[in-house]
Image 1 (cartoon, rainbow, N blue to C red):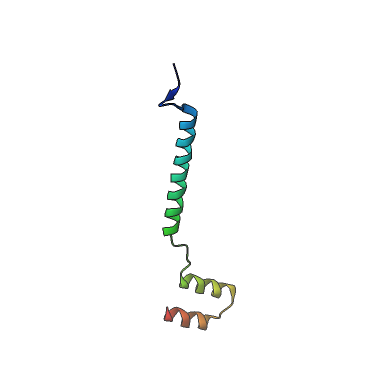
Image 2 (cartoon, rainbow, N blue to C red):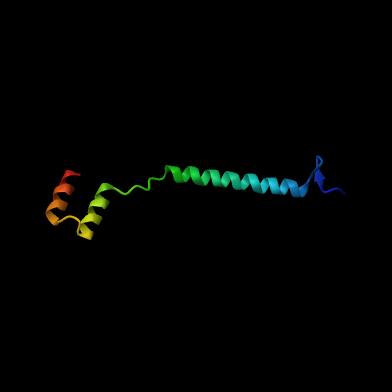
Length: 67
C-alpha cells in the first residue's frame, strides 16, 4: 500500500503541517506581545529617581502631586 494521499508523500505533508503550525504560533506570539504595554508608569520612574538619589524628598513630593 502506498503511503501517499493524492500523490503527496506523507513526510512532505508532515513537514508542511509543522511549518504552518510554527508560523501561526509565531504570528500569534508577536500579535499578543504587540498589545502588551511594557512602558513603565511615570510614577514608577519618579520612585526610581528618588530611590537612586537623583531627586530629593521635596522634589519627589512636588512632582508626585503634579502627577
